[in-house]
Amino acid sequence: MNQPTPSLLDGPGPLLLVPDAVLLPEGPADGHAVVVTDGSFAAVGPAGELARTHPHLDPVRLPGHLLMPGFVDAHHHLTQSFGSALAFGEPSEIFRRVWVPLEGALDEEAAYVAAKLAAFEALRGGFTTVADAGTRADVDIEVIASAARDAGIRCVLGLVCNDADDENPSVLDSAEKHLLRYDGDPLIHPSLAVSIPEAATEKTLRHTARLAAEAGAVVQIHVNEHLAGVERSLVLHGLRPLEHLHSIGALGPQLLAAHATLLTPRELTLLADTGTAVSYNPVASAWKGNAVAPATTMAERGIRFGLGTDGTRGDGFRLTEAAEFAQRLAYGLVTGDSSCGAGWTWLEHATRGGADAVGLGARTGTIAEGLAADFLLVDVTNPELALSWDLPWELVRRGNRDQITAVFVEGRMRLWRGAPVGWDGEALVRRAAGIARAAVRRAAITRVHPTSTAAREASTVR
Image (tube, rainbow, N blue to C red; front, top):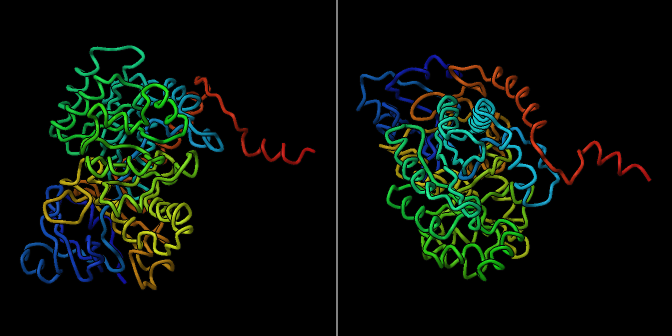
């Protein structure tokens, strides 16, 4: 079987790509092909038909491959990539003890390298879009944009608009400028962000919602993530975080509520009625959360949601598996629901649903004519996928990033067999290792849990 080569794919286009199948919203379509030109899908349909309607194009045959949408990470923190295992084993709300001091220790170079490292990991895991919830590093946001752009990933770039501690009248001016700053940029899509509802004044929460809605952008806010956050809101406002946002008019299609794990039936109704979107972050729930978002219930009630990593690990296939697995453990076992989304739900919300949640549903997330050519070529000849009876289910439970042959963003090949195209990934990792050590030494990080080695030693001492 002739395998594709990067030289056939890494060109200016247009390209007529003929894989074994194309993953459409309704499922895998055997014998389909796509035409990619000027960063978008110019045509999607049966291979024979596209060959007839595009006789000037030589088909690039991709035997043994599935062409599928790239994954969308609906919640990330690009400048936290140096932290890694510093957060492992830690109790919830580690942002105060780990992330705030770590990001505060980043200078311009460190912030750029941290963000590009995170983008590199995301591309390796099949993510073509990441939503960055804003950095606390004291750098121009363009540093993060440059890192994403240079890596070649699409980025919904949040600007932090916190002003509760020091009411800053310039916050809203900065927000307006940020929403205009990347007009026409093919990869950077501006967004606004508030760390938690209590981090901004009610005026800012209302106005950022209005500004984002008018700009067709999203406001990213961590909502109902931890018990401590819910209790803080009850003490301050007499309302839970999501209820408080509703009371001041900040809910709506422009809001991307990160986590939303601790939801009452009324809060689910508020999400459904207002069109508010959620980032369901199952790995974050397992590693450092108090609960698992009721995503199967959200799907049933038509609540918009995507899947997010929260910067835990950049593997889209493992994220979809975690999404299904967490629902099964938290909800399916106790109700006897052996399906828990039937596989397709998690692929849907990792791609098209995620794009919708981050405000890019009209731009990416689906293999369809007119949308951005953000896609993966997945090798389906490996032992995990070759004997396929139900490919969507198998992608959720048996897919992994090692099966990704190529990653395309905006019609350009950005990754080939795990290595970036056009820049040196190994050199970036080496550079990041040195800068990260220096940054962690500078940061006033406080950990509760010892390292795994120290914990093992303590457990053997009696």
